[in-house]
Length: 344
Image 1 (tube, rainbow, N blue to C red):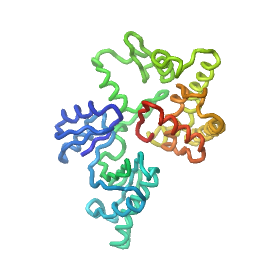
Image 2: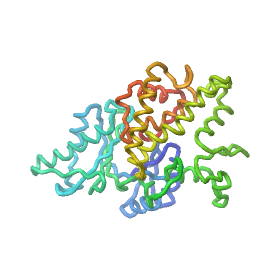
Image 3: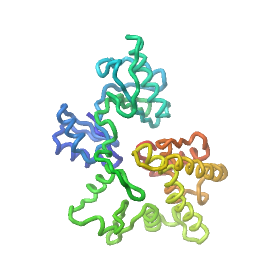
């Protein structure tokens, strides 16, 4: 089995799986592999706090082209897992590969599966993205594909899913991992650290800092020197105005669209996508003339604004119409020390 998690949570996930009864644990980037029977698979899905999905690997093979992917997927006997009357869904994830579009990878995988059924029976199973009989995960990294069955269905952070939310909510699995890493004594309530009861929070000795943009300012000023947050009035103002854009226009545009599509939030997604198109048009015009947002070098303005924009495709806001914005995202990802997250 393979349990997927967020970057940096591999150690706490391995500890959690071991306590649940898993054996032969192996930590890899953003995941832990382990041995489990059917009972333990269900147990991990039920009780793991930091797992995102529990996958059952089926096959691994080179996939440097769409034809190679199609041919290898088609070699799997899919009749072992579903019938022509049943439904399927395919999720794709790609990184550092010739095939670099996750939706297209999912589509080609689906085509190979249904074509196999059509050639054998003259009929094909249907796609149901909401409630499929089986959900298939295809992950391609460095031109190597891994095909797995997804035993979890939706992402595990959605268990007992929220009906209401506050401003800038955090993924529940990510929140659980942060609590576990913090060494919280399970006595001191969050409200003592932040009277608003919200995350993220940064504790640095006796200093407690809340809000993403404020944390960026604190970290940059304490450890980054002039490079990430300048002190002269003009440069500082130029950085600060983009921090406000990240907190407002970006959050209410691509941020809200992603919350609706990926996490099921009840909000006006049409308005969110309109907001996203407007702000991305402004970004496109600016970045067509400038490599970075605020100054002639990267600053925390770029760090604050990039994530929700890069994740816009998860909310129906792809960057294809905005080549200058896409190029800027690539530049940010190439900065020394950059650590990504799923889908970026």
